[in-house]
Image 1 (tube, one colour):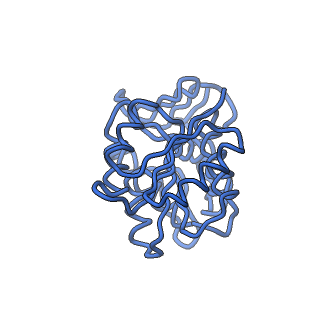
Image 2: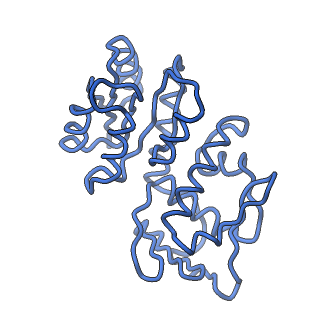
Image 3: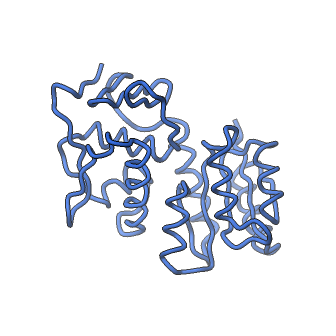
Length: 235
């Protein structure tokens, strides 16, 4: 199946460049030049991944991202932010709203293509081992359905949040460094974007509620999922 990518940017030259390289890589590409059109295209076309510029006329990229995550039809779509700003606060804001990744302009179209492929792999089949059912305290994961519940209530997780949670639970009791998580969950090189991990862990903890306390911060290293062995099992 050919995956669809929606490119949202108000700079025609960038849109054309990105669309060209993605089409060359085999993706079906559509474009939008503002936030309103982006939301309409996302709802009607159901893209697999959206490449979303932060600075858009009208609705900003952050407004669009927030709306995407609230809508049933688009809450699971992969999102890569593009930003000309280098301030960390902008990237943190985007990640906290549920972006899967970000790139700072100017960027390499080849790198963007690779990152889209990485997100599609997470959406398709998170790389975990063992049986299809995993429980850890109040958290239950049905890996065959990509479904997570806490005390019986289903959570709405992005593909990245889902893979991050499964990875931490699969390796419970062992400290996972930020570079390790970047390589496993984001398919990224270990020397970039460690802040990405922190923001996704923070968002995941919030969604898990009190159960989020089982994800411990190991200062100076990374994170560890804490759960009594008798309460955590795979079948």
